[in-house]
Image (cartoon, rainbow, N blue to C red; front, side, top):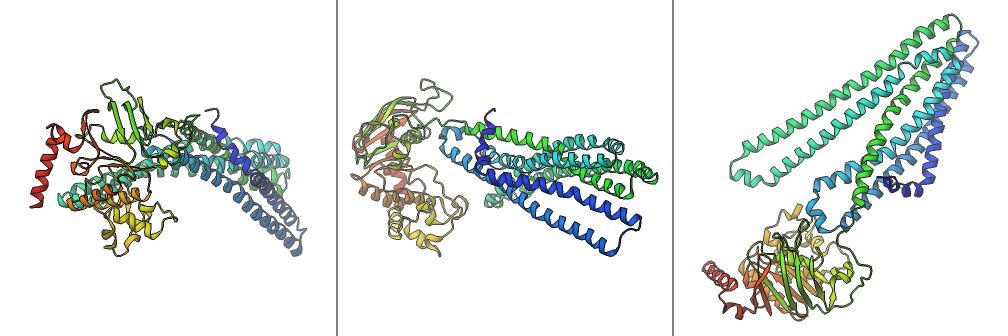
Length: 586
């Protein structure tokens, strides 16, 4: 993309002084390195004609020590400035990418693969860092140090320099070829390592199932196969790395052979001095890295540019759900929600398609009322709930909050007035306190405990040795499904929003706990607008209105008493569940 490079320009502008200081220091280091062979030449020439004493040797040694100290200081400076800037670019891009991803709509993540996004946030940004850091260093060394070394060699003897440079293009093209191969095989190693990690993680996560079904041998075989593949990929990488360095050494030694033969003859014939001969060999050693850098830098820049294009492609992705130009915040809403002929289908189809999830939904929920939503699995309950906080937008019709189309309300303002618990509660790998409060220091201990009591999880938390400081592990692994659901409910209740949206809030708890939670929600009626979707109908029986969804349409609506008289889906399901609960109670 043409504008991809514009992504990193602000970071270079922000760090322009460190970059300039780093480049200047790098040039100084390259120049200082060129003086060391000159000092060696002086010493060797003086030794050859026996025109030097111990004091003069000490002076030459002090020259070299002084140059080495200066090189160390300026090398530290350029590494600190240039590589430090590349790290800041890496940090800035990663933060920007993550912030942008958080702004994208839920529909984007329905199609994007988590592994791909992780690769963008790690490998791609790492390639950009390498291009802006070591790429700049390699380019500078290839130009400044390479040309300067050739210039000093030509100053000693032009003809010898011409012969010595014959193998150098082999180093350039060899480096380009091998670096491409190494990158490709390194990517394969990384992919294989990811597969191996996932295989092992999955086996550890499912160790109880594996042991229960006595599948240890088969599980070990899967891990061994993934491990073998990882080793094979590494061996292929080792082969190319193992061939690269000997090959570069061979090309360098070819130049050295030329110097020894032709340069040695010229030294014997006194065309050049012994000091020039030794200095020439030293310059040849300095020239090897710039030749390698010349082949390496093009690959670095190409990979960095490709990664930059991929990051730019994501950053150019516009969220499907965003604030309209005339959107305004809504202050202190009462909580009246109205659906007017709402139809919805997921991206890839229209509301008129057979695959549409919701059709012509009309609902009127008064402020402070409780609405119950029931229906068979796949009937559209969760989708309907996700439309209220605008996780998705309607395809037809509109949803009103206190008479305002929610698309005319700023998203941040709308969601700040809604507490939402999804069907599958998610816990972070922190403590119970952090999961309930989102690690907010503004929440007092009293508020935390009250939210836990309202969610019927306080006694459970207090039963742990560390109480609210108990670490729940990845996705709440140490907790049961019901405990995770109640902690997620406590998080929802703590927000104290005027609108409460609950997707199957008691599906994983026992009957007694479910009754406690429902009693808590009933006490909130009148103060909050509560919308509950549930497969357990006892959760909605006391709602002012209940609707039944089937294949995205409302097939019946009314109060519990009215629906029980129709002998429809609600009545049949309620009687069946009532019998099951009675049997469980006995």
